[in-house]
Structures are given as C-alpha cells and as structure tokens.
Amino acid sequence: ITVTPGRPGPAIAPTMYGVFFEDINNAADGGLYAELVQNRSFEFGPADNRTYTPLTAWQQTATGGATGTLQVVDDAERLNTRNRNHLRLALAGTGSGAARFGIVNSGYGAGMALREGARHDFSVWARTDAAAGTPLTVELRTADGTAVSAPLGITVRGDRWTKYTGTLTSRLTTTSGRLAVTAAGSGTLRLDMVSLFPRDTYKGRPNGLREDLAEKIAALKPGFLRFPGGCLVNTGSHQAYEAPNWERRRSYQWKDTIGPVEQRAVNANFWGYHQSYGLGYYEYFQFAEDIGAMPLPVVPALVTGCGENKVTDDPALLERHIQDTLDLIEFANGPVTSEWGRKRAAMGHPKPFGLTHLGVGNEENLPDAFFTRFTAFREAIAARYPDITVIGNSGPDDSGSVFDRAWQLSRQAGVAMVDEHYYNSPQWFLENNHRYDAYDRHGPKVFLGEYASRDNRFHNALSEAAFMTGLERNADVVRLASYAPLLADVDHTQWRPDMIWFDNHRSWGSTSYEVQKLFMNNTGDRVVPSRATTTPAVSGPITGAVGLSTWATSAAYDDVEVTAADGTALLKDDFSAGDTRWTRTAGRGDWAVRDGAFVQADTAAEDTLVTAGDTGWHDYDLRLKATKKSG
Ligand code: AHR
Image (cartoon, rainbow, N blue to C red; front, side, top):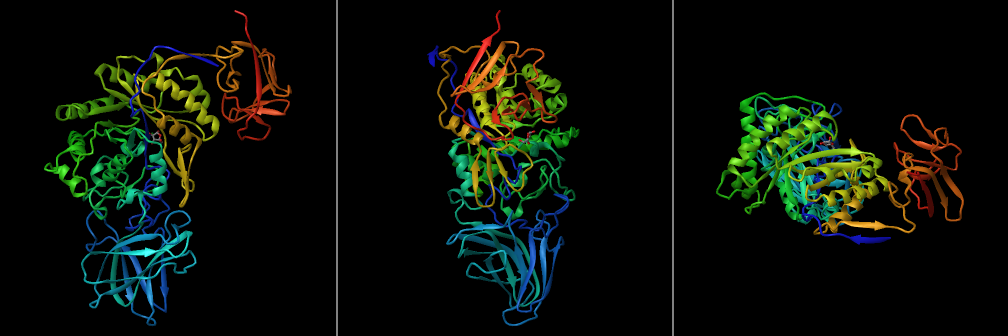
C-alpha cells in the first residue's frame, strides 16, 4: 500500500473523543457506584419497578431463639423528609444470651463480591427507645449464613437519629457475600441508610466508585464525560421532589443529587429500576476531574423525548429549571463565597470544576416546542455566563423531519453545537464514512453524543473505527464524539451493545471498547489528508481488509470472486439478474450462500464470511478478484 500525504487539514481537539455515562443497565447503583448494599434506605417500591418492595434484597434473620417483627414505615419518625422510609424493628427480647434478631442484605446480582483481607466501611443511621441502648452486631456472611468477618459491635443509644460507623474485613473471597445487622434486647429499633463500601474505591474517594470499572474508563483517557443521560435526563415529570409532591419518575434534576447522601432524593429510573442518586452531580464532576475529562452535563428542557413526547407548558416551572441550570454553573464554577460554590466546597471541593460545555435536552421529538424552551435556557445562560457552550440536539435519530427541522432551527439561530445520536448496522457505518464531508463549515458544530454499530462483535468495532476516520477527517465540524452506552451489567441489561460489561466482581471491555481506547489514546493533533493505493489496484467501493463489503455493489461490478489461499473457490457471483446464489433468510435479513459451505452476514446487508451455522469471527487468508463493469 502506498500512502501519499496531502497538506495538513483541520486540527483535532484533545477533547474530541470522550465517554457518555448514563444510568442504564445498572451503570450507577449496582455498577460504577461502589455501594454494596442494595436498597439501603428501604425506598424501593412498585413505583420504581413493579417487582420491587421496600424490602427488596433484605431478609429477616434470627439466632438463639430471638423473635421480633420488622416493618418498613413512612411516618413522622423518619430520618428526613426526602428519605421517607425506614425500617422499624420491634425486638421481643426473647431467647438465650446470644439471641439476636435482624436483617440480611444480599447486594446486587449473585451477592456482594468480598475479597479475602479486604476492608469495608460500614455505616448505619439508627435510634432506639431501649433505655440502656440496643447492642448491634454487624458481620459479613456467605450466602448460607456463615460469618466471614469478625463481628463489629455497635451500641445504639438514644431515640434520635445518629450515624454509626465501623470496619469489616472479609476472611475469605466470595462473589455471593451478605451483610447482616442483628440486634439484641427488646424495644423499638429504627434503622436507615444501611451502607457498606469497599475501602478500595477509585482513588480512595469516600462514597466512591468501583475501582475496576472506573479504571477501565480512565484507561480510555476520555477527553470529556457526558452525564447523566440520555433518556434518563428529560423523561418523566419536571416537578421537583418536594412535599406534597413526592412523585417518582421525575426528570433528572441535579439538585436532588448533591449534599449528604442520606438527604438526597430518590427516583424511579426511566430504565425501570430504583435510582438512589448516591452517584450524583458532585461525584460526576469529581470523577471527570480524576480521569482528566472535561465535564459535560445535560439538563432537561421540559419537553420529553424517548417516546413520551410531552410538553410542559408552565412558565414558572420553566423559569425554575433555567434558574437551576444557572445554579448548576455556579455549583461547578462559582467562588466558595457564592451560594452554590459554597455547597461544592462543603462537599470537599473548594476549587471550581471548570465547566465549559452544557447540554440542554436529549432527543426531543418535537423540535419547535423544544427549540422555544432551548432558546430561553440559552439566552439566560449567555447573559450570565457568555463563555459556556450551550449544546442543543437534532432529535431522536439521524433521519426524517424531526432531524431536518431541528437542524434548520439550530442553523437559523446560530447554535454553537448540536448533539446527534444514531445506532446503526456496521454496513451503515461503512457506507457513511463521508457523512460530515458535506456539512456546512460555518454552521453549528457537531457533538456526536451517542453512536454504536448494533452488536459487540469484531466487525461492529471495525466499522466504528472506519467511521471514526471520517469524524477525524471532519474534525473542524465534529468537535466531540462518544460511543453509547458505556456500561452494562450482564445480569441487568436494558440496552445493547455496550462498551464495558460487568458482573458483581468482573468487568471486561468489548471490541468497541478497544477501538475507543485506541483512538482516545492516540488522538492526533491535525488531520493529514492522504491517498492510498494498493497493488493490484482496487478502487471504487471495495474497501476493508478483504473487501467483502462490496457484495451489494452490483451496479459497479460484473463478477466478484473470493478464493482461499490454496485456491479453493469460496464465493463467486456475477450479480446477474437471474442469480440465485444469494438467498435472504426470513426475519433478520441475513444473507446465505445457497449451496452451503460458506454463508455470510448476520445482520442486514453486511458481508462477513463465516462457516455455515457459525456466527463467530474468523481470520481467512483470502484472495478477492473483482471485475469492474465497463463504462
Ligand atoms: O444510549 C441509550 C439511549 O439511546 C439514550 O438514553 C438515548 O438518548 C438514546 O435513545
């Protein structure tokens, strides 16, 4: 191959490639957020997911003949108004000296992943009406109830909420660990925010992140971190989580997610599970800083997308959301003397986080309704913070009238940057390498906030890599790009493909992860356009390692022939009208070779060469011969 470089083209910003974190597939609770206790504040319920109850992941336990009852209550004795439920235990005081009654938490998935010798930070909020106090015993257990840590003894004293803490060290390694909290004596004991964190969180941060997952993200060297979603951001109601309106299924509102964890609101996640907000805005900003990424939050625009298509027509509510967004900028960047800068400092970060970009809205289906509200946000932000880049979006996908209208409005208004999303076949990515070549050089810049080729196989990653060369060639227009989604729990998946997969103790990158890592770790400074030629010369639409993505190009070729290195004919096609060699199988649009030894393609219109019945990816030493049509 001879490569002939041309004159240097556009500069590529070091922030070009980043990551998009959304709490989907258990990405936060049960994933990146290192909390091991599931349903720590007894707030789970059918409003989050119809299979949930306030005792999801909890079981009663008793030893030595102890008895009692336990009940989750939302009464005037609650921990605080945002943390509504707590567990009330009525201890009967029965049984022998070792009698204890209490609860066991089973964590996420198969249980808590405990490592021999690893230390864990336990905490609980508790109160008791027993005059002499209530002795608690806290221990790590295996699934069959065997204790695997020394017991941690705590005496709860007084009938007002107090936080108790301690350390537990596991004596063995298990992936199905449990946490047991048991009490002796009689009286009413109340518990809330029962929490267990591994001591080894990412960079040792309290209320921190699971190390292996955070390290995998950090290893990408992302230029930016877009958070917290996606459909998670703008769907649901736009009311605040306040009395008397404690409604679940609200849009993601950043003020719900900061401050002491026991005072944060909770929410029903758009993806069908409970959201604790333990991983909140402060933690996102901190993580972005820790991995050297530019923080890029997205706020709701009061028009829902993602199939909901609801418009909130309430000027006061819009005003409040705009003010919340201005407050967010102050939280990120304001001095410690400002109202929201002071809150950031109180959480441990007096220095500003350096916010420069902010998204308003996500995939709204109603471009005109969205744009009116977007404009109100944008004007208010520009008036107070002219240096912040406010990012709009082009709607739910990359085609059709919503997309066109959103771009038209964005161009007319001179929006700085537009967020585009698309999920497509590998073939689409190969065919759309030139997508941005024709974009207006003077119009809004592109933030490709979400994209993926629809599977996690090698050829998906390869097609993404090929596509990314087109993004780089157009780095003067495409300023930011992030694959989506980032994380997925193998036992709790709402969306695939995903970049990084995990269970309760392991994590691994997909082939797409490797491609992202390659590009992010080797981002060039400048595009140098080049021309490549091969011997023998293959031109036209034949591209890729073996050129097999050309089968559909019957307009260009008369004959295409593929042989193995030893000369065995594998495929031959003259693309004649009466050709019956290719058959389309029902349903998934697969192509197959009629006579059998080799079939190809497992998704529409793509041409992976595989052995019949085998959908894996293989290396073949292939010879490709194609006869170009005359004229
Ligand atoms: O990345 C998963 C989802 O895809 C996002 O929530 C949404 O923005 C898009 O439709």
